[in-house]
Amino acid sequence: MGLKDKQGEAVVRRISRRRGEDEGGGAAWKIAFADFCLALACLFMVLWVISARNQERVEQALQTIGGNVPDEGRGHEIISIGSPSGSMIDRQPVPSTSGDPAPKRQNDLGRGNGGGELQLHRTRFESREELQELAQVLMQLSAQVGLSGNLRTVVTPYGLRVMLHDTDRQGMFELGSAEPGAALQAMLGKLGPLFSKLENQMLVVGHTDALQYADRRSAAYSNWSLSVERAMAARARLLDSGMNRESLLQVVGMADRAPLEPADPRAAMNRRIELLILTTGQAKAIAQMFGAPDGGGAVKAHEVDAALPSRSTLQALRDKLFPKAAPGKGH
Image (cartoon, rainbow, N blue to C red):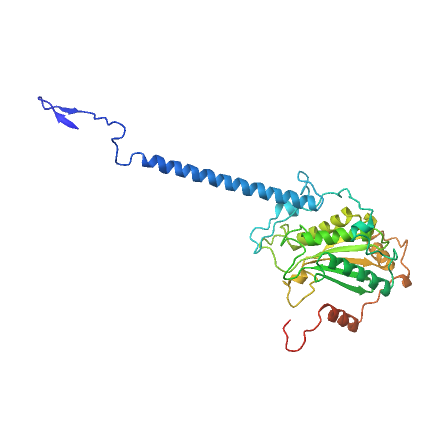
């Protein structure tokens, strides 16, 4: 405190306090600061765990479709530029494969499709009756893995159309992702050894619903990207489980352009993977369509049914896919 001496000059005296004498809370800020540091450390730990978990999921997804972490996405502008940010649902893009994974063959057909209980009696399926026989085998396989409600088969003039679609209760892929679910992986794992015995070629087609991404730029990640990657993921799983590479004629994505339920473009059934097992004539026609236009190896007229289905045929197909509900009952 300040005092005045005899000459009237101010004198400043410094008073020191001993430890324990500061009872006004001088150490309280230290405790608060320690608590803040502890909370901050916990936050960093939680963020680190989340980051590690996300990285693990990405690596697992890449391994599922036969890719590898260092090389994924190189040369794919649509993946590197676009992003699913702003989507109304959690859609995490998985980069498409940059090369063909080495197949992990299972030559034992009995082990691949339920202990040998389901065997094919022929290697080529051409007629409607033969394709229907193949459809029955596929339905039995779907029942083994719990997907009987997710699989539909239709015999068409082009071959056997096999649809593995979502339902409100069970999806084929992680929502918005190209990572197959456990049930679909099991189903494709059984189809690979079965298809390894077929001489028919097939198409693998990916479909999505009509829910769009918020980023509408032409190079952004979209339903086109997602449908193609889902088809590629199905292809990789089929090859890894034993199917011959020569069996694949085309792998494409159709986004939301061919819904099974046009009245409800966002319906779960529209999200699906389709396998079109072609007759020999149809496989030749498709190969010729995209082959060298020199007229060589032209398909004979009697080998392929080039006529469009009649209106009655299309209506019968729609009635089979979507049976009408009984009177008084909802859909």
